[in-house]
Length: 68
Image 1 (cartoon, one colour):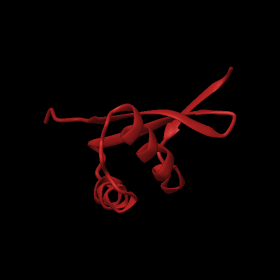
Image 2 (cartoon, helix red, strand yellow):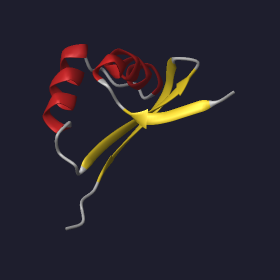
Image 3 (cartoon, one colour):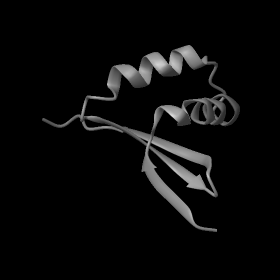
């Protein structure tokens, strides 16, 4: 198994949403995800990375840099 870690792309939103809703018991919609990621995508303090295995998103992590 070779896992690729990269920053999230818009095409990943559905997979990340599915993982969050199923594994973390969140109740967000795809519209919620689009609004959130479009709001933070140009803010360098926020980063979301996805883990990709054979083209499938299998995990994600989000972070925020809060020290100034």
